[in-house]
Length: 386
Image (tube, rainbow, N blue to C red; front, side, top):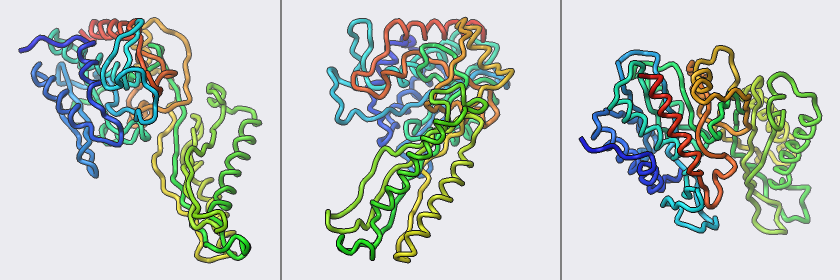
């Protein structure tokens, strides 16, 4: 049996795979599966049904009993296109106490530590099982988590999940959910001089966007309710990040398309905002069709992520707090796969090395100190599992 790789060597290997969400992650999955097999660990994979170039990986170490701990990470990363990097994003570069490279903090740093801990658990032996779950498509809406969780039910069911998104090794026990659409406004082209006889998809799309602005203003002015007050901002917010449409300046636009999304606070549900969206789309469509019956608004749901809510008797949170000594309350507005695990009945907590403030940016990095703190966390976890 070969000598295990160090966490740093594992990080070097993982960053070397350019697993941007739009591309395949199979070379990384193949490598991890082979590495675990070389150390006596049988890993299973779940292949994405409609995109066989992507797969998730999961494995179990320890006695074949329920009640173990899952180390949860994702294998995909965001693109580097158009970003001004000062080093090769697909190679770990150490400089000034930092490890630069795409995914070093979000979240191949944690993945490397989790793989190292799983092999160590196999070598040392544990009385409480340790599992690993590596997903695909996290960066495009945590879409890979639900099928991974379902596939993992062939293993003895674990109890606690540590989702290793970068939190500076602080325990995060709540975050907002997400609901995102792609909206296609189908207008009716006419000469712009005869605008009243046609339907400009851009101008009617602007009504939907203006409604989002007004909704944000109303929500921001309201008194926060329940758990919403734990977040910044303390309300569900609406956002449009991309838009395209139109043919020429003097033509009422036939098409306008844009992304339309919500960051949903715990205490509210994506279903509530789904109904609100459908009602607004129906209202605007009715107005368009009074002018031209052919006009309409098409909405396609891209992803839905439930909020992650703090809960009493969270054994995963208690485990992380015992290991880290951190008793601070931490809630974030970005989403993670923790909410899908929570919805599936697991106790979950978000805790991992690195800072979210440098994720997705050029020259993304994790500090050597944070990476080492992550290794110490895994050492203490293994001691408890033993």
